[in-house]
Length: 302
Image 1 (spheres, rainbow, N blue to C red):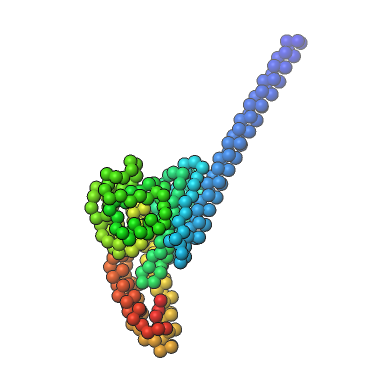
Image 2 (tube, helix red, strand yellow):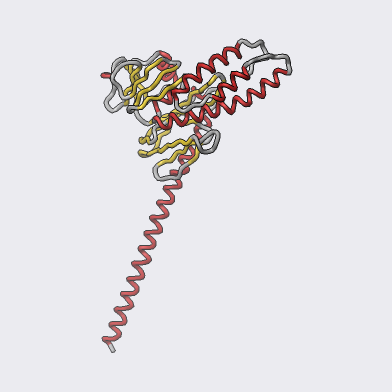
């Protein structure tokens, strides 16, 4: 009997220990899942706050409002772009580490597909095709070295007071680890061929074409995100053109005459298959804009 009780007692202890191990395992698993879910929520919330920041950088004085976001530890940000979804404007997404993706539907964010660091530098520039189309949001986490930069670029960047962009006369003066950007000549990571108004940017064996402030987007973003945003911007240009067509009809009732509507329709029909087509579109838009500027007071379309 004693032996039997001893066996029963031993079994009870073994059973209790086994149950205890299972409960402990489940508790640890639940706690781990809670921490993981909490971190994912925090990263997702952080991505949403960054998207909210983009809206504050838009508008008339946006280019005078650079921002620097400091993370407590290294963070990875992932961006993508799809011009075919959310027609006709397309959309982008941003994700921080393992957090959820947050959609960007009304902003045009130019960045590498993946950036990592503690400091996120943000600034914006307006973009026009005759009339204002939208604001370009430029993001970076790396240090950049602009070599023999054109004066217009230097003046605009210095005015923004961004800490991650330095200007030098020769590529040999660039700090180790920085991304070098040469203007028209030199052996750099990125090469700009052209002037302040238009040209192309050669980067990672890819060539993209720019007009105006799209130069900044071409320098700081990956080729696929850049090309996607160019198509999104031209889609917005075409939608705004429809609004200006309606405005033309209104001002015609006040005695204004203009042939901008015909030329604007031709610009709307122009297909943008890549950023290279943008150069041709810009030439057509310049002609339309000049005609608009010559209109008598009160008859301007924009």
